[in-house]
Amino acid sequence: MSYNFDEIIDRRNTDCLKYDFAVERGKPADVLPLWVADMDFRTAPHIIEKAVADASLGIYGYTESKDDYFQAVANWYSTYFDWNVEKKWLVKTPGIVFAIGLAIKALTKEGDGVMIQQPVYYPFSEVIKDNDRKLVNNALVLRNGHYEIDFEDFEQKIIQEQVKLFVLCSPHNPVGRVWTKEELQKIGEICLKYGVKVVSDEIHSDFVYGDRKHYVFTTVDPRFEEFSIVCTAPSKTFNLAGLQASNIFIPNVQIRKAFLKQMSAVGYSQLNMIGLHACKAAYETGREWLEELKVYLKGNLDFVREYLEQNLPQIKLIEPEGTYLIWLDCRALGLPEAKLEHLIVHEAKLWLDSGAIFGKDGEGFERINIACPRAILEEACKRLCRAVQSLG
Image (cartoon, rainbow, N blue to C red; front, side, top):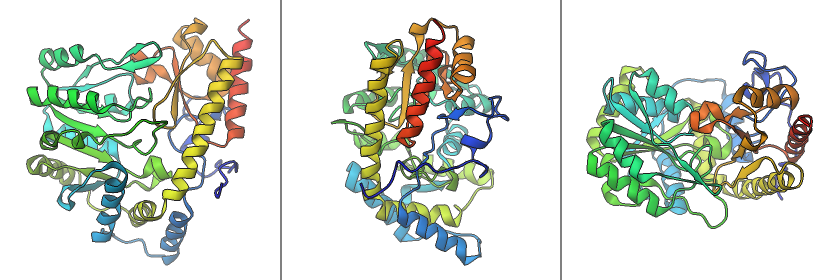
């Protein structure tokens, strides 16, 4: 491989959320963190070079994008997702959760139903509740180690709870589903039938395993453009989350105007210079790095699967179709949620994401970020194994 993903980079004492805030977050200082979804790898070299050049300039003023930025983003999605976007659709935001919050404000009013599919990325529920909307859960169903959508419940919840907005996680974090074209078609048709707007969070779209294919929601059916917002970002793909640059596509002019009005109301305008240029560099020059990264991540996934089968058969891997976040079913350990968390944090000395924070449907599960050097992952698995063996 051209890139050394085995290199262990010490991120401590850099104000790194993943490594430097265990005590502040109620964890022992010596936990090994595999929780928050950023990677322990250096990003692609050309991105680093551009960021260094920007930093060396010494002037960090207001920055705006020109046509070459849009072309870099548009070419990426056209080439790899068969999605042809228009420049007028693009709204740049500092993050996708920020964009979801704006969409909730723009497209619903206090007390309206906003639906999600738990267990799902926990900021979804937080931003719904914090905006005084009604959280509606169309819980995913786990059948034979595979999560499915309960479409009957999906439609009934829309009717009964008068849902106005649906937040789709595609690919799904944390259960790792990459939704099929048929599933997305069914989602869209139900939402179209009942006038439900859709915000599709597609931040993990570049990470898909095997013969799976990620479909951008609005490419499934052209009618879906009229009621949908598609949220994208280079942050997960190229480890740029801290640079806060997301690209939100809103084809419908009225929805876009409402969204922009809310963005103006919170006082946000331009992206920061380094984030803007890093995004452009990533989409123009980062493909080779990404392809090698995906091979490495597949190796990490294979390692965890084999380790669990050989050493921890009580813990089941929910086979991911996408993302670098894996979902472990720990229910066979027979531990209440509090005792499972104690085992993970205080016995295994691991900082993972407890499944319970993704909703009640996540209780008994743990989410692990495998975007780290293999040696770190091996150590984490050994710690987990020793802790489980201590149960007797």
